[in-house]
Image (cartoon, rainbow, N blue to C red):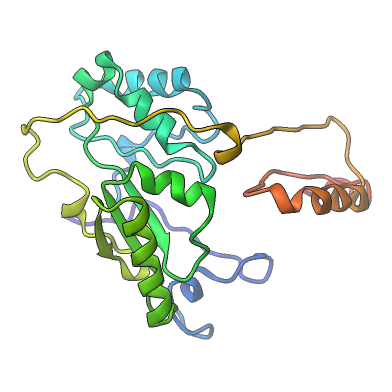
Length: 238
């Protein structure tokens, strides 16, 4: 039995990014509908909540207290999360007994930068690597992406994922009763080879020009930034 659970529309006129259907490879003037099979009843919105290992364990403990207990749990990390630290946390004896880690999936843009520290950090602990945007990348770029994956994580299974479609069978175990093996994450890498996160807030609107100047100075060292901003030039608008 199928039914619609959520219907989301996109405001293309005010969206600062390209439309979703264009990102998926459809013509800009095409009319498309994206259907995503999901299970909202098993979802926990922890956006911005789990920032430390203790936070993550607290969230997982809340999931495991549910009745019925979830058969599988998918953790979609922030774009600036350290995957090695997350795997290390999940190797703790108590959480490993209750919810053993099975698969770590790393998504690689076949035409994107391959020397990014975030990407390489994900590759070091990946079991499966999904190559996306192959329809937009050249054959040479795709070969370079495969070579980069092999150099960092030769044991990972590499699958092609056109339009982000990763085969479910490479992520989820067909036999939930099979044994799981603890994994060695390796030593913590120096902070210079990893990344740091910084949060900033203000109770007052900020100058747009000043904010843009600050971002300009930080840009060479910033991997990702997001937030809600109100400026003195446009009060009340965020």
